[in-house]
Length: 163
Image 1 (tube, helix red, strand yellow):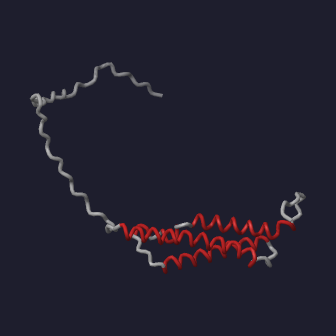
Image 2 (cartoon, one colour):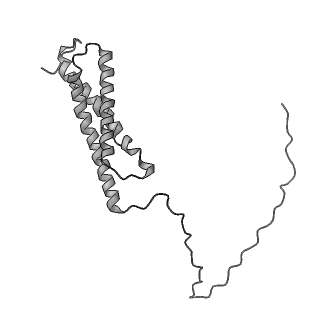
Image 3 (cartoon, one colour):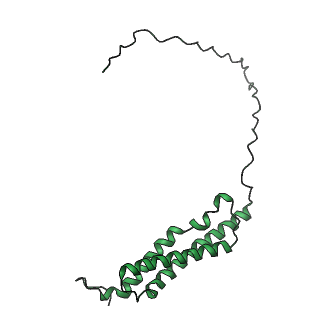
């Protein structure tokens, strides 16, 4: 490895800052300041929306969220009874997940029918609004109803608290 020698010279002197002279302030007088001009901002890329339009958009997105929650509860419970005849657990699982996706696509179609006036940057909200809640509530209700329906028939060695 190469060794480097340390510099022993002093740093190069730079230009010295000039002292700023402030104008003398007479007692009791406040120095005048220059008016601050506001710079014109660039025009917004999205058209300005008023409060009524925002409120309408928020109400429709809120309605879409709760619509998906309701559909998740109903579809999760329906999946238990619709696919009860399928014996193979793997086939039952994938059929139920496919059913969940089909019901979600139905909610997307309903959302498009709501004719929400969303800016182009928010177009994906039609699909993403409440998707996490939809998936987890669907799976929770599906597992819960399956457990309530078939839980007492499983032989696990642990006594069931349900009659």
